[in-house]
Length: 309
Image (cartoon, one colour):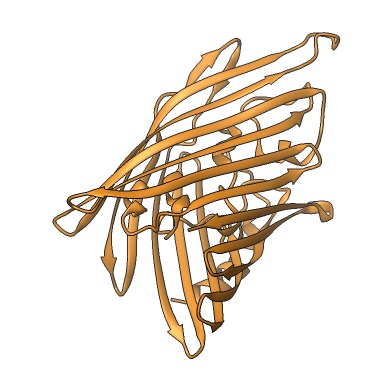
């Protein structure tokens, strides 16, 4: 299965010139943390708090840690993400919550829903995209089953001094449903995300990225190294995205670990490159992670996540 990563790296490049159909809010297209960004956002079968944004079924077994992630997505685009998970009762009942707030500037003439490329450049339209979610999961007859509700919004306004000012003001309440179980020595998972209806408000139409994501992940030891593979294929109307990520960790003393990550996926926009990279350092209860995603013209999106447990 580890061979999937280099194969995906080679196969993703010719696909990167295609363009995914525009959907929103734009926050739904941004990785929640440095770890998920480095691993190509292939997180439907993921293993930490960020699963609340991808598959609530995977909350089972997640450590109760608090995360803070700060990402610079472009010259005028920055995002903060926070969240936590805690176990609560019978049937491995586990709760989780998360929030993401993104600030960006867009060109006044940019069409809506915004493409993720909007984050790479500035403009006169000041925008905020936000996501708040809470979910729970239980174990039933060997299956992990989870549900989550979330509120998403896009708000952007052109200054009144600009000719023909335009306003974007979209809000929706959505749901995610997921199932996971142990399979072939790893975790197999499926999630239906962004369940809800499209809407039109103030002359702008919001088309949601309703999708089904299927994935598998596995961890194993190879001598002194800890290896983890994460793979995923997501499907939405008019677009299919394969993605995979490989994580390599090395611990030289108990409680201290250094981690390197690489991911590859089918890019959603022509500006985005298929490869992402990252690294992390754990020292006792503190973990600091970094990720970089690449775009055309030498542009990059950089993120840092701090985890405390």
